[in-house]
Image 1 (cartoon, rainbow, N blue to C red):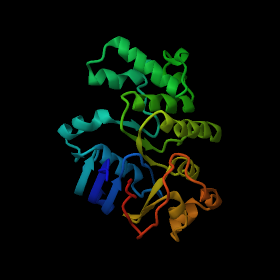
Image 2: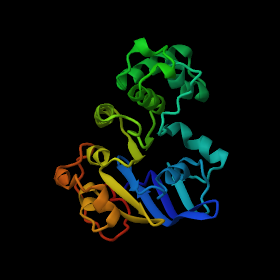
Image 3: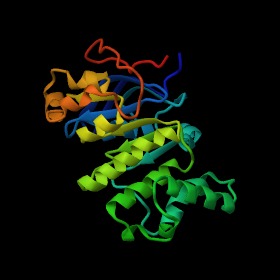
Image 4: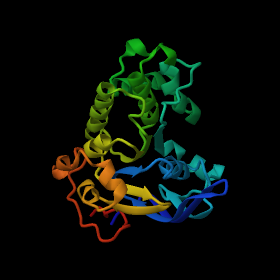
Length: 273
């Protein structure tokens, strides 16, 4: 039995005097593509920030890639080169061109010769379908879809084991959103990744996820396969998947694993054999 990539036990988080999450348990296993869904204010992005060590929990245990992880700098340094992050608005540095934005993680790690940096940056840009002719463009010269792809290249350039996506299609029109999802769907054939993403887009969940975690009323209401979650008699779930229930009879595009029964309202992610 493989160990989880992320292990969360008894997590409680607060912002100011408000409790955002209360006593959450969650395990994410290698190769899982987990979608975090929930209503506005349910704490999807906050939970990602806790996993990244950007926010310290009020209570509970968080382990990422086998390291205790509570936002302290020593723990973060030990694991941060093994994950990539795509922030909601891309978060490209406006003063750096495309090439230098993607090269930044390689240069921060140090030890790479500039010839290797150039090779890695250009090959990663090619992987996300950004041509070398765009490498010297500034972020202000890019469309929203290109910003997302460049930000994804930056998240992938260190060849991470774990990828975090915060609302990956936010701000994109339907055509660009579909293009980005198609790109994301192609990555598993080339990369071995575990993915955790927050999203408000049911289409993204259906296309990419093989597991879904539902955040509601400060709790983890349920965790299971897309097919399992879509059948839950839960007000938010019914609303979220209202127009898409008939689309989940097929196997999710990013996984060939069989769906497992949902044993309780809140369960651990199904363990990979």
